[in-house]
Length: 305
Image 1 (cartoon, one colour):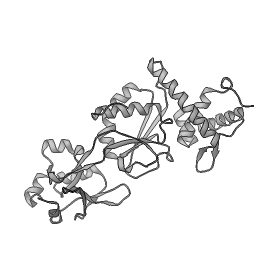
Image 2 (image 1 turned 30 degrees about the horizontal axis):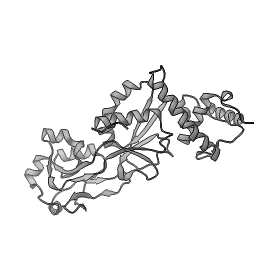
Image 3 (image 1 turned 45 degrees about the vertical axis):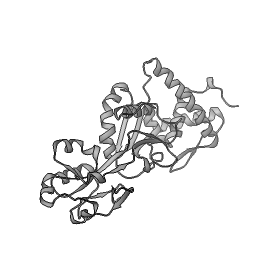
Image 4 (image 1 turned 120 degrees about the vertical axis):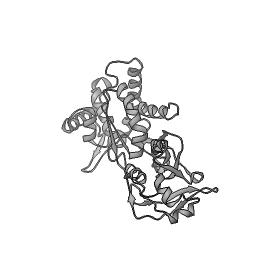
């Protein structure tokens, strides 16, 4: 006989939903503030009460059974309503939602998450927010993250994605003293006569500079013996006169303002995809994620979702 709601521990259901979302006893236990052993015992107790197996456990992963997935879908809607009700009245402890884990790359962390942190921390002092900054492409669900931040065209098709910004301009820049010595390029073909700082992507491939030529964007393989994977290091090298650099315009607004870098080939600047936050399920995302998303969107001139 399956236990009724009044016979089932509320916290055990919340824990089960967290494990189903994270696919990990350890990550879920950290979020809920208990030990992995306690989490395992709680789920075993819940399965015994309900008389069904909710999770398939292997040495590599934890996945809901068909019945477990159905229960998780039903529970998610209920917990969303509970969270909304508590937040609507400002109930003490309403924001005690455990850990929120975001995976992002460095430019997005610098441009979007860092400016949002003061407001988020003020509104949600009890949420443990972890921002992991790395360039490599990852499976956010498999690695236990609630959400990731990437350019739109890098978001996996099976993810829910929300734009955080409008389109971005990618520009070619150089230090004034480099341009005085070498002269500015007048058209993309002139890049072959310049020193260009190569840009390495998160998967370790070399990125071709995309420039707009009137008919659309065209990728250019540019010459240069120095390859850098980090934007901050690329900016420093360009300011030191090492060569031309291809950078996100928003990332170098301070350098453009103080004149330490200047845009060349401005009419050829490429328009890039907006930055998006993405996650595995609209109904299973962390309660603090919507708030963080809206803070970032508002700071970048977009409305709330």
